[in-house]
Structure formats: structure tokens, C-alpha cells
Image (cartoon, rainbow, N blue to C red; front, top):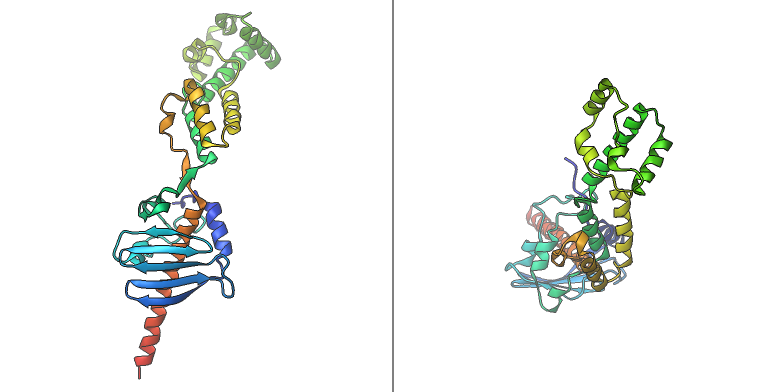
Length: 293
């Protein structure tokens, strides 16, 4: 089974690139009271500290600065995901439950982890259009079937594609009725029966074919949405003005996503816990060597 795509792949790739040579320095380690620093030797750039005390873990430093979490007595245990897939995502990112970790934030920054994201807004718009009765994928497929049937009908009538397009334009100019557009009286019974076997004649011919395809209209709406995606206020105003397309419930859409600073903080904690566990294992190994004869 293929692994899922990491929705924050860009942030994770940047984190890996900047922390490839980082090491842990344990400054204090007394039960639940710990202070560790993760950095590339010789520089504090892209470095951070992890401090723990009963029921809390705090981050500080050049990155991941100012976040405090609380949940378990030992927060290192809480953030230890070694029992889960380390390479959960297709890019090797760990299986961090960002939403759950965010719920454990306390203090002033607990309200800062999510911010308006124009990509989220545009995804909502695109998904909504894809499911729209008149503009969605099903509507586009229906129109394509109509056009295929019309081309086949006119082929049997001896008309080429150029003639079909001209008849369509006349229909859209209201010079040719829907009945006239789909006229099949020139077909033999055998030809009509064969055509009916290939297409759902009554369903496709009863509905007038719009001049603009659902795909073209959808592309126009998406282009317009991009013009208003710059801020949450403009995006919400635009959705309200286009309620005829998107409905009245767009106020329920969450147009925010986790801020990159919080995402990086999650990756920082995960790496720190992993390096700390390796440090603990190394200490145990060295202690065993000392005690052996």
C-alpha cells in the first residue's frame, strides 16, 4: 500500500536540509528536569533548546522559540513516537499528529499555531466546484457525452465536425431549437437503434447543452478566486458574494493551516526526542562496559 503524501512536505524538506549535521548536547538531566540543546557544532544558527519539568516541555532558541506544551508528567514520553512509523509519509516524514500536538499547547502562543493560508482557501474552492451539480466533474463528463453523441449523430447524417460546430453556434444564438439540433429523422431505424445502444439518448438530448463547458466556467472561477486569495477578509467577502455558486455555509470552511513555525517546532521536538533516546541508550551501554570485568 503506497504511503500518504506529506501535506507539509516543503517544510519538512527544508528542516532536513538545515538540520542534517545537528547533534544533541545534554546540559542538565535530572529525572523530569532536563535541558538539552540541538545544534550544528560551532554555530547557534538553526539551533534550539528543549527544557522539561513535571508535566511540561518548552522550546526556545534560534528556531522553535516560545512554545510550551503540557499533557503527561513526562513530556518526553508524550512526544516519543518511536512505536509509530518513523517514515509514515512518502517523503520519510514521521507520523506526527500535528493537530493533537497543537491541542497540548499552553500559554500565549496556543492561539498562533494556525494562520490563514491561501492554498487552503483555493483547495476549498476547487473541491467545492468539483462536486458542484452544474460545474463539477460529473457535469463536465455529461457535456462531453452530449458532444460525443451529437458528433456521432451528425456523422450518421453526413455532416462533418465543422457543420456540427456551426449548428451548435446557431443553437446558442437561439436560431436553432433543441429539437432541431438533435433531429434524427434522417436516420434509419437500424442506425437509431445502434446510436441508442452507444448513448443514453433521452437523458443526453433532453438537457440543453451550455455554450460554456463546466470545465471552462470552473477555470474562470478559480482564476477569479486567486485574485481574492491574498487575505482572509477578501477571500471570505468573495465567497459571500458568490454564495449562489458555493452556498451559504462557506463561513464554516476553515481557511487556516498550521503555521510553518509551529510545523518546524514539531519536527524539532521529534528530532530532539530521538537524539535524547539515543543519548540515553549510549549512556546505558557505556555503564555496562564499565561494570563488566
